[in-house]
Image (cartoon, rainbow, N blue to C red):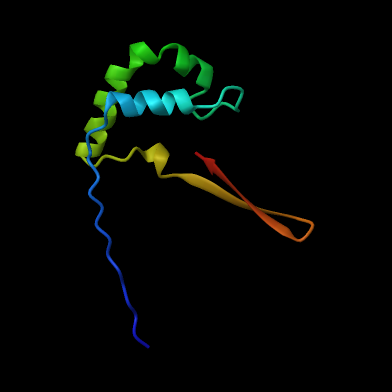
Amino acid sequence: MEIITEQRIFNISPIILKEEINKLIRSLLNGKALGPNSILNKIFKMVILVITKDLTKITSYYFVNGIILKSLKEFIIMALRKKRKKLLFFKQL
């Protein structure tokens, strides 16, 4: 049996643009459950003009230097079964 492996190379810029951060924050849905940071999406939208510049610098720094925060690497995976259906839930630690 021959095993074929494929390597994909993506040309992704590690530099994050302010426009990308703005678009992402604007796309957040209001009224959703709080994430690990306990900040409402509505608050992010209200302070978008104040935080975008610094958030862009920080995010670009992490990408350029290949840093992945520990909180982005850890999850709890729980399988729940209900009436012959399997549901998977992921919870970030």
